[in-house]
Image 1: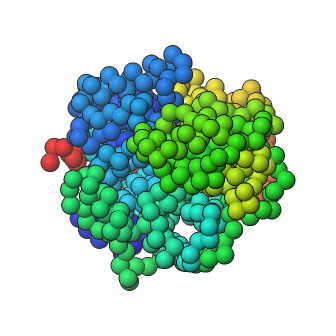
Image 2 (image 1 turned 90 degrees about the vertical axis):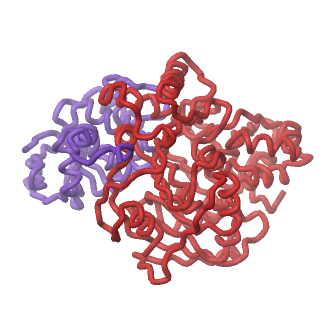
Image 3 (image 1 turned 180 degrees about the horizontal axis):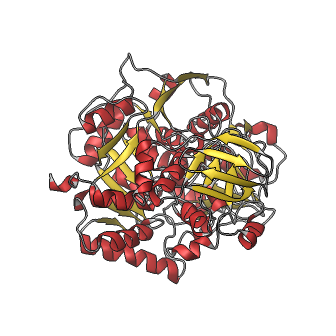
Length: 414
Length: 170
């Protein structure tokens, strides 16, 4: 069996196969400040004051519109705070960070778990061997009441990545290269499993970068078998024994992709599709107005650290704006202790409070028509960060190098 | 059920930011959401000003990719679209359609369905008749479970009548 087949077989108490429809119990139901208020409204309309199925298995995170920018958002935030108080469910307020990152930092995520939440990148938790899925208002409302939901068991595609990455070629470059080959609809209704020695050597931040962009291939989820480092981390956070998970050697895959990355160059996705990927050096004359380093894909300490190693002692190009956003408060603390804030502030960057930041319009930092941005986030759909704007997706290393020169720059050249 | 309506034709990879731009995410009133349906697409303004009850959306592959926002499906349903036909649907979007009872049909041969064509759609058997072009097609229906959820009036109505107990009750 593949990982997804194993998780659901155990959850429903019988062997499942791809194509099966199952009703499965859930280990955690999460919602955010976006989508969350809609969930509470639906819940109240449909189930009144009924208690949620298990108040220990509900988590509310604030990560998108934080702090509240206007009255409407402030009211939405209060809908969530009042519900959390009334139903005695976990709430992580505006001083925490990106939802899924908060969940695993706070010990709410384990291998074999099945988790749902109002975030299409909830599935990045596949990096921990967890079956996590982004869903809409109605699913999360029903999940919160019933504690179970319907799932269609997907087929699995295997992605094997081998070779030692050259300097300044990162997990982001790997996943952009994978996206180029698999394409934006190439994993539709499929689960993915990442393996190979390149993946096995990756730390948690790098693993998250890979699994966070499965959504951009239209995949349901991408798994990585947790190694001893990942298991130790989860053990520390959950204060429980965590059980490893791995696919059977006899597991059946719909397709296997093999990528050798020992000579991979820094990659970049051009407007307006995450799979329009080319080598960074092919675009070296494109001028950039703004750079964003952060997001659920590239907002971990390791991401900020590599950006800082390039920005140290330098100034960003005059006329260019650099916005840096740690994924969580824990990341921000680590960055502060390691002296990264000093480097960022000295080079001319704006560092804002932890959260999702420049994921979509509605957040400070949106672009004017005709402007161009290099972002370490995961999507560059047309209009997503401002009508008439163009967004390129790249690694924190490429983003930092670009901030120094003002034109799209291969990090090995600064 | 047979539906007859005018086609609004869209291409591949129409993401949820095109269907429902992110700046409207704080909206929780469904009628207000409907005023922004398809606003981020190339023909957004034209769509909003001219869409009529009973019009039908026909799109290419991976319709509704991107964000999990259910606003996208609620907005489409709210502006009077009775069915969405696409070559394929992104999985979260597909679930959201089923859960709110917005009928969807998967149809490979959409090349000869043009903007403004009048089509007749049979939701029971998946037959799609392009009256303007005089062509007939057979679309793929949703699965049995998805159909049961839709027929119940959506996921929450389905859960209310579901016999199985809640997880907390045992």
